[in-house]
Image (tube, rainbow, N blue to C red; front, side):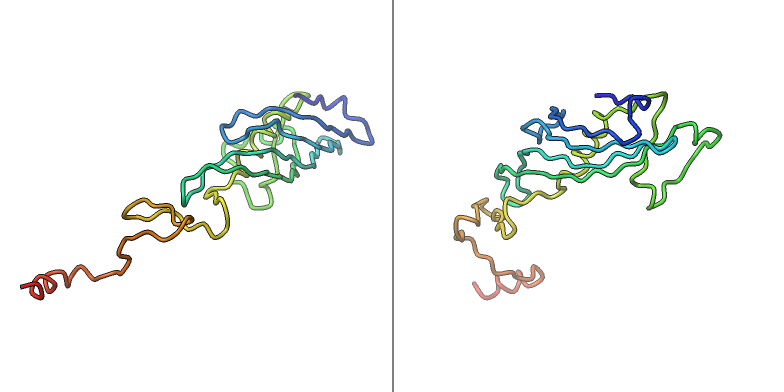
Length: 165
């Protein structure tokens, strides 16, 4: 969806829609509630996105489902503000800043970007997930495995052989 800057009224524009996103994790259309306002050349987009997602637990490797809710707060500036600069270092206060060209803003790109950036890096099916045993691969959420979990210093393995003799 594209929003034409000239179509944004003085009092702002409220958008409420659903849209599919190209991501293997997102399993439902993204619910979008945005408020678009124009202040001079700046366009301010605020709102919230939510979607059902399917992830794989980074500890036990089981698939689980969750809901992701993403707050959106982006200020668009005309790309002409960057003309003449070959490189521009982004400062911390500019992380919610983006640029538009021409007379339109691509809301689809904003939605895609915000959803993908807010997917968890190490998803967990639950806070206290036990994971899987490194030796036998048993799911430790279902109970303890029979593996010997005592840690020994490998430098003393030669001494174990002496005890056996």
